[in-house]
Amino acid sequence: MSTRVYGVANNGATMKIELTEVEDKICKVLQGVSELIAQKRPDLPKIESRIAGGWVRDKLLGNECNDLDVAVNDMMGYEFATFVNEHLKNQGVATRNIAKIDSNPEKSKHLETATTKLFDRDVDFCNLRTEAYEPDSRIPSQITFGTPTEDAYRRDITINSLFYNVNTNEVEDFTERGIHDLIYGIIRTPLEPFETFHDDPLRVLRCIRFASRFNFQMTPELCEAAKHPQIKSALIHKISRERIGTEFDKMISGPYPLLALKLIQQLELYPIVMKAPEDISSGTVGSDQMAVDAVGAVTWLEQQETALTPSSKAEKRTMFLTASVLPFLDITVEQRNRFYPGVQSVLRDSIKTNNADIKTVSSIFQGIPVLVELAKENTQRQIKRAELGMIIRELKETWKTAIKCAAIKELLDVYPNAPWSNPKEIQIDNGVCQKYVDLIKRAEEYGITNCYEWKHLINGKRVAEVVGVRPGPDITGLLEVQMKWQLDNPDGTIEECEKMLSEYWANKKR
Image (cartoon, rainbow, N blue to C red; front, side, top):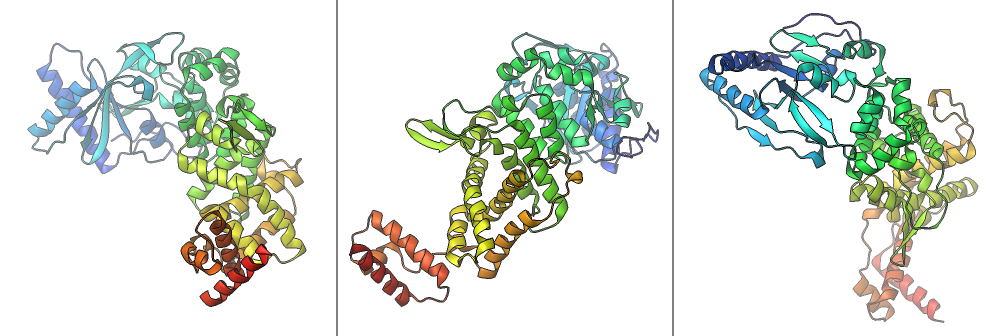
């Protein structure tokens, strides 16, 4: 087990590899496999296995990592894995099946990988390699066995290019920059950034993601390359929207979403990541600064510890996603003679998010202008139970998140010059926030926080009988009238409700 110290990381961790009991057992197995191959295949060069990439980086930063990727020289991963099982059998240890994952370039699997379990830990095996690219594709046109140095240099950033050699128990830094960049908090490509990004433009977004994950700084040369028109064009034409969406989701789900949005803006990538719909029928797309400010406002709310603070990891992600697309709040698109909120097109077509996200953000967008107005009304008079309740029923389980997002929109409108991109510097009074806190409190006082789950006292069939009409479009309106009455009359009976409906219908028909 290695006890060598490699320095102090940017996050203050003493950088060393301390293996868990299971990891130590795995490394001993891998050492034994190298000895077995040397005996059985003397025709081959010495086969060494190295744990690659993220596991090494995270270990040095003092974080645990469950992903074990093992790279071997001069042998395919699947063949090496079969030797692993042979060694285990020789030791009297139970083996697990080996799954061979064929290369799938469209899903960023550029070479064959073998996966199995060692002591109930998932382990992937692949060969050290070097790659060549065609000009119009991010998918390697040629992959061959490579040296550890070649493999390290073909990786996206230096801090991901580190190896842990299980035979020597040492961290290997073949780029001679990985350790340095962990110490100083730098995101840098092993090769010239333009070459790296031209080969695989997705790496621009990966650089942003890792910078925002670790709160590291990207080198000036990297930033200049990312802004180059050729790289932007390659990002548009060579990278699938699914891959862009995956990277973006990891950014807003990480520890520093605001840094991610600031970098996207600084690198002039917002219009590429969040491509505006082509069929806009009304509204104007806001600036990318609005997205940065909105994400900054969510970050600020996180620090306030009020009723507007995100209450869970899931809600925080929803708020960051909503804030990221706030520039499309007022956009409507027309498709096949039907009109839709523009944000649906952005989420569906630009970042390929799931239907649940599209539904949730669209619902929040629908609620923001209504809730802004209602919050204002509530400062002038006590809003009625039914007024708030019907909006909650419309927004369903997103109602509280929508209130928080409405607060964000008003904060940006009222304080447009506040330093939202630096939330710690923000000094504003709590008047705006209090309005929306009061809305949430009002719902709690009225006991209507889950009113979107309430059933009607009288079903549609009975409503038709009460007012003497056939089931049809009129019933929908009558059910809405009934629910408003239920909200304003929480102790009302079925008989009282039927009487109200009869009188309402009679008056409407006069």
